[in-house]
Length: 262
Image (tube, rainbow, N blue to C red; front, top):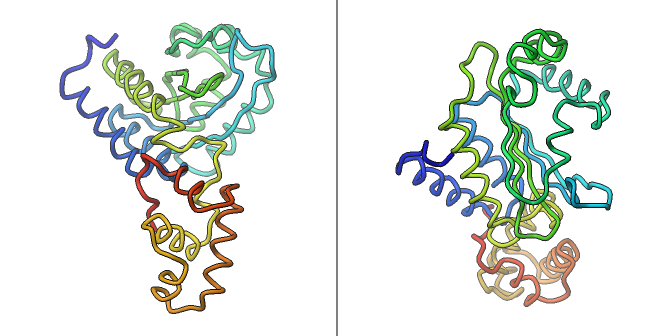
């Protein structure tokens, strides 16, 4: 598959991963960066990314969906309609299930034509009544393990209606970038089950930034021209948010990660 890639393609995949790494402490920020850049490089309309535990044939435990990010819908109504449709069909009855249920920990990339067959797809209710109305057509599914045991992420990429199908080169780009990113989830890149920066207030993000710079509570209070007791309350709230009890524990969570952006 990777023989379809040029040196420039490989370089660009690593550059995208680097820009995600710059946002790595913020799950929503780095995920949205990935989806936006991947959409552009393979000319996709919609991308849906999920982080999942206990997925596929080798797991007896119930599958857990830890988080999902979506980007690119032509309208809120289109996204709502597609999600309502997806929720009405039991997973076991979807045409993708026989393929995805066999996932055993090795990277898996599937195309629409592998799953449906081209002629069947264009005759189907799924395309004519749902996907076409939502502005999407050809799709790729990529399932890739992370370095966290029993965990993978999925990427579903859809071309827009009227666009050309995904090329072999675009399949390869998706697969390579997916593998590069997944090697860093839980280390350089925040995982979906970690406390999220996006739920902190702006002031607490600012205090967190100063803590990671090594400032004392007294220095932070002086910097923001507020009372030390106010900063102490923010610090305690930050500790509770990250489920730590000391600055050392807090700092250890950000080792190797770029500082959060405020």
